[in-house]
Length: 249
Image (cartoon, rainbow, N blue to C red; front, side, top):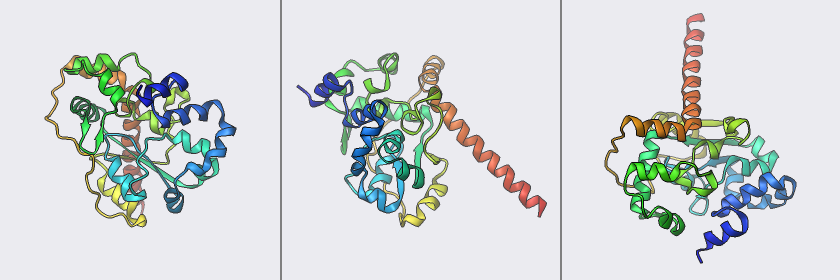
């Protein structure tokens, strides 16, 4: 039997990261005994990067921490393992426009992954019938995050607290894929991270979505749309404050 199916039978989660995530909620004090699981490279940089799949995360994780730190833990995991470190360290994530990320994930699933990151066998089997966008949407609808591969989950699942509808970010800094490249490079400059290679890139054709498909995506990823709009609104508010400060000089 596939090890991930054994995980699911025993713990109700396919992925190792999810098993720990479940323990974080159920046994928060006991989980703190596992604080040594936080990578040394992450502690050395005093910087937590939350890797949201299909948002250039592999490139960033490897540039910061090396090849062994590309897992998809949520920010809740780090808060549970070591609350002091999670509170004192800098933390960030990169989010992607939900329509664009949906297209990337759909291509990833259809191709069985990329040359450097394959879709797990259990989800390759579960999605073997998926041929169209509507097939894929029907597969996603009605499933909880732990019954989905990481590429299929809402981005808010990785970066938010899980309470209050899951919409309160625990990550201190959020950047938008394709919109904040200069700001992200400036943020990473003190870490001596230069231009980022584009790893785990998948090839795909533009995906044309009809109005009904777009509405279904908006419903599936409503929290992501709201979260990204809040980041953009904060950017606009920051720009307005800077203009006001200059005008007052």
